[in-house]
Length: 142
Image (cartoon, rainbow, N blue to C red; front, side, top):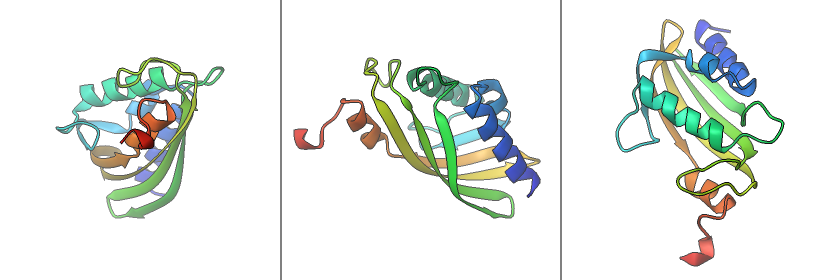
């Protein structure tokens, strides 16, 4: 394993333990996270985004939504991974009040590392599918 994959695995372990601060050590102060807002998120934006995810999707009795990495590919200073985030809709999410429904949010990300920290990240996740799972959107609604 490389320093970068060790850092990523430690961050996932922290996330799954409910340690948001531990998870956020993955990100360098200069982070630019693309894909979850119209403009790239900086470190404060990354913290706010993941705090919202944690608050909205924490299952009863769980430390946080569970994050699982799948198909991890490392090349040089970049790691690409397919991921799955699971939990329960227990708090407001994108103005949708809690429904208690289980969710599964698949996504793909590419992370650029420097000295074991992510400086830039590109991500995409099935947010429309998540909105359908919590009843905020229906494919039959058009």
